[in-house]
Image (cartoon, rainbow, N blue to C red):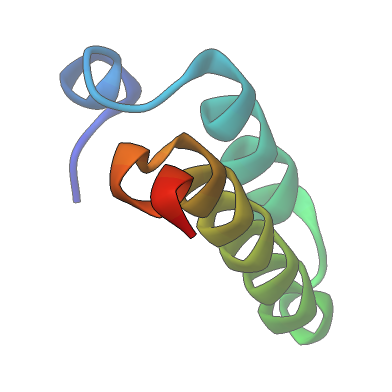
Length: 55
């Protein structure tokens, strides 16, 4: 897996912090947190997609 330094240029600080927080959680809670993060990132991506502005 990549380190934070290797990912630093491609992943926002907020996302890096969220991933660190998730990794600190008990294993049984991580799936829900990863899904919530994925949902949040999908919404952010959809809002930043210039091709969706015509909709």
